[in-house]
Length: 102
Image (cartoon, rainbow, N blue to C red; front, side):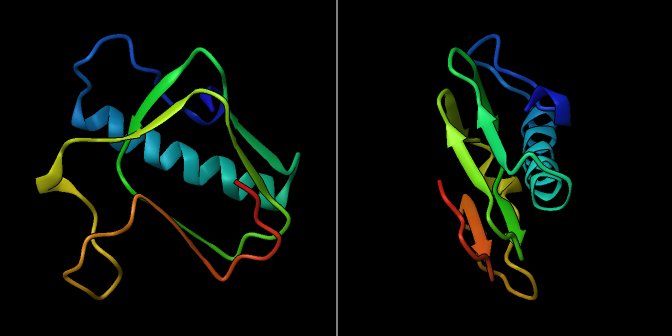
C-alpha cells in the first residue's frame, strides 16, 4: 500500500487529505494489480489506514488481503457520492468485477 502512496496512521487524528490520499492509493494499487500484477493488494499487519470511500470497477482475478486495519474516515461532510447521484458511496464499492477475493 505504501508503494501506491498510502499514509499509515501515526495517531488518532488523521487529516482529510490523508484519508483522500489513502482512498486514491487503494484504487491505484487495485488497478495495478488488475493490469500489471501481482494480483494481490495487501494491507499489511501492524499498519492502520484511514480512508474515504473507494469505487473500483472491472477488476478481474484480484485479491484484497486485509491483514492490518483499513478504516472508514470520519469526515462525513466530505464523503464521496455515487456517480450521477446524491447518495453516498459505500466504503468499499466494487462494480463489474470477476473473481474478486477480499
